[in-house]
Amino acid sequence: MTHFNRRFTAILWVTLILLILIFWSLFISGPNRVREAQQEQSIARIESKVKGIKGITRHVFDYVTYQGYTEKKLYWFDINGEEITSRDMSTLSYEKATKIAKNDYGIEPVSIFLGYGYNNPCYVIEGKYEMILIDYDTFERIYERELKS
Image 1 (tube, rainbow, N blue to C red):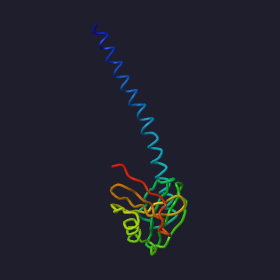
Image 2 (cartoon, rainbow, N blue to C red):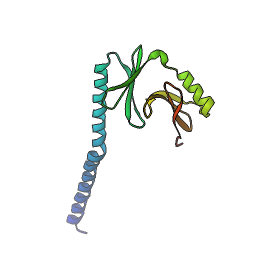
Image 3 (cartoon, helix red, strand yellow):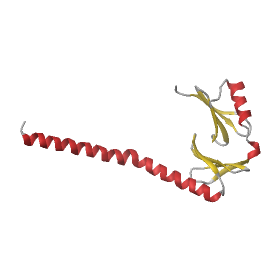
Image 4 (tube, rainbow, N blue to C red):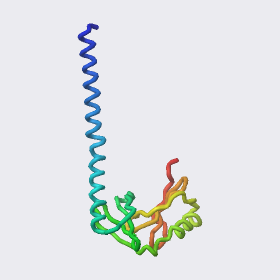
């Protein structure tokens, strides 16, 4: 192989690697950046509508929702930052939801947070090997599945 052929082959390899990196950034990180920008817009919309809202989190179940709270209320929003529903803070009962998950379904809670089920707000309780969604108002099981270990 001549010196020219080796140099040409090296240039082709560098070009191939650069093309792969460019395509990676367009097709992998590009959609992620769009999702992050949309998420930031939704959170900004929520913050402008509900003054003093804190702890905004994103939950994905049947669709994307956001949850947040003020001193007096809990809020759930859709992907566009529009309010779906709200509840008085006094109705929040992680203890009752945890007790139901443990006693009725045998799930030892590792974490619990608020989410949104098919049509209603819910408690999302994750055990070591399973997850359960319990309706916020009725404390009935909405969904249950095993987690991959």
